[in-house]
Amino acid sequence: MSRTSATSRKNPTPRKPSHGSPVPVVITFLLLVVFAAGGVWMWSNRTVSVKVNGEQVQVRVDSTLADIVASEEIEVTPGNLISVGGNVITEGEGDPFSATVGGKELDSEQIEAFRAKGNEEIVIGNGANVTEPSHEEERETQPKMEPYEKIGAVTFVAQWGKPGKAVYTVGDTSGEAVLKEEIESVQNTVIQSVNPKPDDGSKVIALTFDDGPSAYTQRYLDILDQYGARATFFCLGSAAASKPDLVKAIEDQGSQVASHTQNHQQLTTLDASTLQAEVSDAFSAISGSGAPATTVLRPPYGDFNNDTWLASGGTLSASVIWNLDSEDWRLPGADAIVANCTNGAFSGAIVLMHDGGGNRDQDLEALPRIIETLQGKGYQFVTLDELMAMDSRIPDDVASGNATLPEGCVWPTEMVAAQ
Image 1 (tube, rainbow, N blue to C red):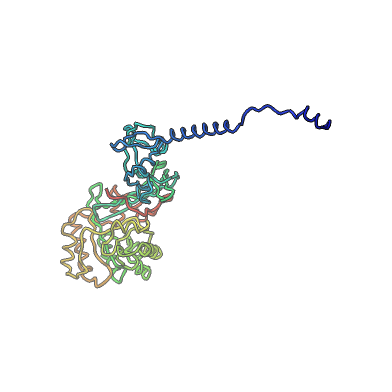
Image 2 (cartoon, rainbow, N blue to C red; image 1 turned 60 degrees about the horizontal axis):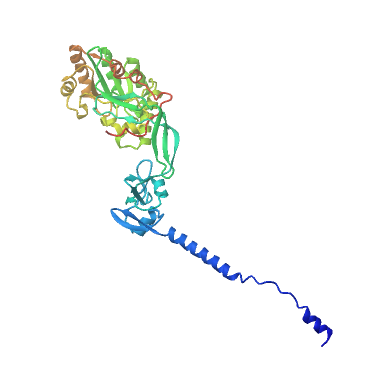
């Protein structure tokens, strides 16, 4: 044997001591982790007992109310999305359901936050309506028209409308606006209707003539002059424009010129723009013919109502009809005309006659007798302006005969709702 071999046997390579394999330890750790995780999962997914709509059921712990509605297949009707004005915007877009827990009704946030822990008593119901999101705006409040109810011979603007200011709640979806707080009070336009009555009890009568001026007008004026009487002539704008000398003659006699509209159209049948033109054009024609400005009219056929007032746009201040109708348009004879104008006369009465629109010979015969009869009963003959000024229920500006929409006032576009 060689020396090398002998040496190799005497000095073998040293070995490290063995401590066992690490694999079992890792496996054991992983098993513990899995077991713990499983335990946590089982704990977090355990079921708890709750009472839902009177029935005891098992639900997963920490279930939301929406989970319970779904798992128990509870039939509910969702609420609607409602505008700030209370109108339905979209059906079914309100709260999906309502909930009471332990006798306490939950709001939307509490419903979202609820988690089942066990032993709760839950009542699920139909969903509530939800009002749309909104914001606040300060706006001008527009006046409305307060209509009259009883019809008298003189209907007039008792109060002109003024805007106010208010805070409104405005729906983000619907755009509806609901009054929240009034800052400055709005002043409505008020229309009143009365039979004029002198405050001092004076015995006065207002003679009125429609459809002129015409070839008869000057003869009427001569009769009025003869008896020291005055009257009101409701002139057509078209006739006034063609006979300005007669318009001036009426004023010079001391009588009053007012309007019977431009072309004698029935005002209640017209749209707003045509109505306003028919009224305004006549006023312009009358003042353009030399008479003082007027905003008083007699509607053709006496036909004027609350809706017509609203549509007028503030173009007039007073609408005048009558108490005693001569019915001269029937040509009933002078005796009938006299009787129609004098029988039943009373202080403040307005008498309807015509100086245009046809043959007026019977009126010319009747007029002196009408004046004599009524003067014999102690009546004086006044213009419509004078009659209105005697009644304190009629504002001074209206009684002047030419009231117009004051500065800072506006005409309404809608009526006060009926109570």
